[in-house]
Image (tube, rainbow, N blue to C red; front, side, top):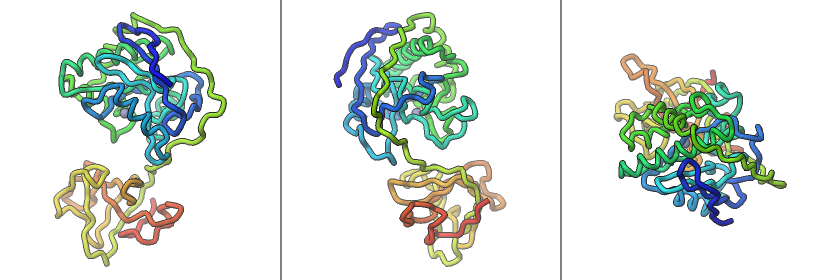
Length: 315
Ligand SMILES: [Zn+2]
């Protein structure tokens, strides 16, 4: 598979550079056949170009199901590269997030395509990349009959733990949540090109499978064992490398919290919960995260775990 120039859409050179079949690109057709909506992303990785991102995908094209993610198109200040045909599935929105289902009746991965905009520390470069991304999105919206005003959410609009495309908006000097900047640009460029729909041939034997579930919207109460000798560390976001709260807000032996999500930390081998503090005087507005024990069950089912650092009462 080689990089091939397929045209110029609204002034931006467009290439295909399709990934080999593996976990990132399986060849599975969208359940809807053609894309029914579009998700606007940014790469979350400043100063990486479209080609850098596609090359990274190619070098890891068959990464494990527990770690795979992908998107159809990358755009930067110079070009657009399509690495997965927009009629095939890619893994650009978490399956467990319910908003896409509520708004569009299905999971984004199964009926939508994802465009990733690159951004840079250089604001001019970012502005050009944002403009190019909207030109490409406009051409695709034209081709597939997608209304950018209500069928082109930002990733952060449909998955609350995401910050994109807020990163590129901020790097361009706009407000992180100001999707209207993007909507207006896309609408403006929709007066331009509408490339002929090129439906990629259906892949005869696609790779089967989809990314593993790592978040469950399960509610309950977690009470730290009275026998715990150390408090449980609490984080502001999910991840051992994320910011911790003050030590006096760690969860001590016997203390409890109510949670609304179970998260499997595949990388580090821990179960986590997302919770709000229950104690009087605590911050009861924000969500916090903490690991609640190692993943030890052979089937990796939390309900079978016997060595968590507390007891769970499921709601
Ligand atoms: Zn995203």
